[in-house]
Image (cartoon, rainbow, N blue to C red; front, top):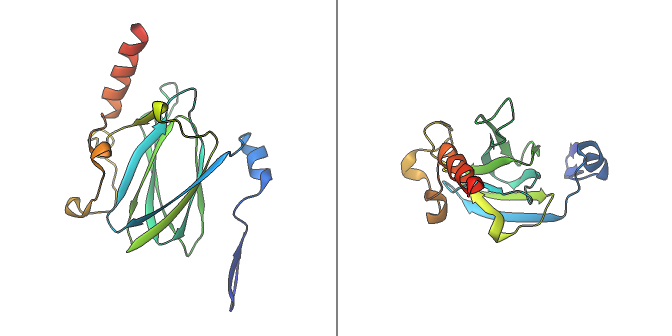
Length: 170
């Protein structure tokens, strides 16, 4: 709940009842600060360390994106995007098995997220933010996008699952 008055606002950002309802415990919290045009994603942790996340914007405005990577899901390969901003103080839940990313639409964004499992570099994964089959509208002009070299090299969703399936056959 968000309460506002002439002094500012008060916001309950976490309540253990959320974890009970979702049947997930959060074990780690991360924060990033990014400038306009920054695009982070699309990231995930591979099994058995797949993470659920509870994300929110502390300052600024972002377009937050979730891609369902669960091959047995009715929404496999589909994406959802939500614009989050400090004024509304909304949160978004990212289920395990989904890739996650965001783009910064304002001058600067301070972004925080809780994770259900710790980060393990050996289980780090990603899919290409500009995968044409996903067609994600990041809310930015291509010329304005600032993305890491690592994120530019991720495979498409289709390529990722082809590689994953080949590894399982070995």
